[in-house]
Structure formats: C-alpha cells, structure tokens
Image (cartoon, rainbow, N blue to C red):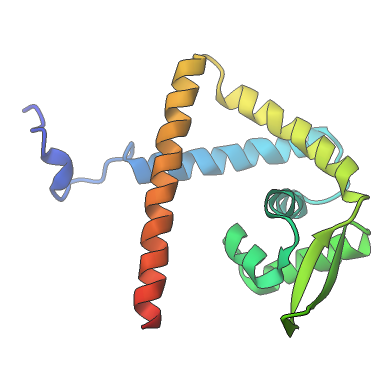
Amino acid sequence: MPASPDSHNTAPSVIDPDSLGFLISDMARLMRATFEREIEKARVPITTSEARVLVHMARCGATRQNVLADTLGLAPMSVTGFLDSLEKAGLVVRTADPADRRAKIVTLTDAAQELLDRIAIAGQQVRKLAQAGLTDDQVDAFKSAALAIRANLATERTASRTEAAS
C-alpha cells in the first residue's frame, strides 16, 4: 500500500533503518571512522580525539573550556584530559577568564597551525571519499538541507534550555 502524503506525521509501526536519525548517526559514525584512518595515514602525532578538539577550537576561536566541551558533545572531564595533552604538546594554552577567574579560556598556539594544516588535508580526503559519485548540485542540496536541520535543532535546543531555566 503506498504511503499517504501525511504518513511521515504518524507514528511508525516498525523502525525504519533509513530514517533521518539513523542516516545522520550512520554517516557521522562512518565519517569519524574514515577521519581516524586518514589521520593515521597522515601520521598526525596526536590522537583523533585531540585532533577533533583542535579543529573545533580553530572553528570557534578562543573559548571557555566548558563551552568547548558542549560544542564537542563531550563530558567536561574528557575535554580536560585532551586539553592537558594538547597543552603539554604546546598546541593550546589555558588562561583564567577575566570575567570569571574560575573558568578557563582555551586558545590555540601558533604551533597548532602546522598540525591543523595536516588535519585539514585528512578532512579533505574524507570529504572526497564521502562525496564520490555525487554531483556538485547534489552536494549543495544536501548541505543546504543539513544546515536547515542543524538550525532547526539548535533553535529547539535553545528554546528547551530557556524553558528549563525558567
């Protein structure tokens, strides 16, 4: 029986392994595994988790340690461990936040840039593998849809946090 136009609004009677949530989860898991292999091939001298921390720091700039943990979706203690290693390697520095001396601001050092360049090359290879066989229009359409989904979910998350705080 063909699905009605409104069938996506009803509760499924079975779990769809190709639903949006599963697809996004599967893609993220596979992208991460591919990224790990590419980082190893590039002989980047830090762990892939530490590489993720550096990349997110390059994305958002100097930031509070707890905000970085939230951005990465990791427990603050996990990020602290990664930052300890990255700081020991001279790739990041942590300083007291002038607005709140209990909080730490994490900043990339100049030494991190060479590694970020190598990590970026690994990332380009991952994207090349992921986009194989797709046209530029397909990639652009997917990216546009993914950006809209991210915005929708970020808006809902902010509203949910605001509601919980009140």
